Length: 252
Image (cartoon, rainbow, N blue to C red; front, side, top):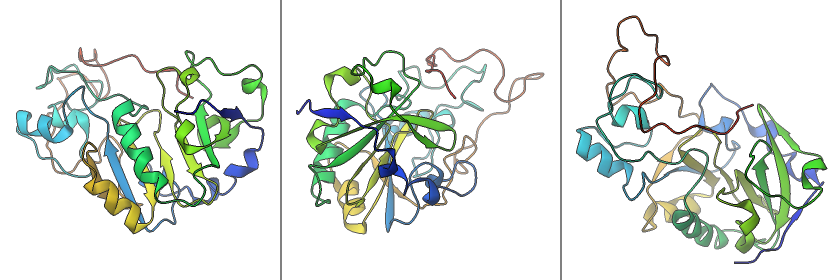
């Protein structure tokens, strides 16, 4: 894998993204730009398990808008209930290296500018040792998020100094597609051509589903799997967190 990603001050390269973000809270196109022919949601693996496997184990239904807490029988992500699943949860804001590599391989076939791509890394990560001066450059500013910007070839999309973090927002110069691993989401969103999305849905080792630009990935977006009511006297989102919960990075 190439290590040649360069910090960039050319934040105007991202100017096309903001105007194409919108929709209701949780909508796909609030995270990845609207206007693409098709969209896919790639589920981050739960350790070595797919979400479909977890749904089968907990008696839930796997579907494109499923939410992790609903699959494991919790009323919300921060519930005091004991989950039905005692394994690790999917990573939040990060796509594991193996599915990341498969995704990148497919993306390369659907752009004419694989050698000229842009990569946004959320500015709040504390464990990423970015090159000197990178943090002082102008940031890409989008609603609720700021990103350090890097440029380079697609095969250098995850340099070693990104540490354990995949890029959060990336796209090629020809804007043929856009990928977003939102810091609060346990899935990655891809917008692109119908051909790209169709290939992603057929790619072994990627658990992916087709979604629409206005589909909701909000915490209450799973309308298929019932969730229990919170414990008496506890509002949704309150109480201790399940033992599967991991401390997130600082959120803006």
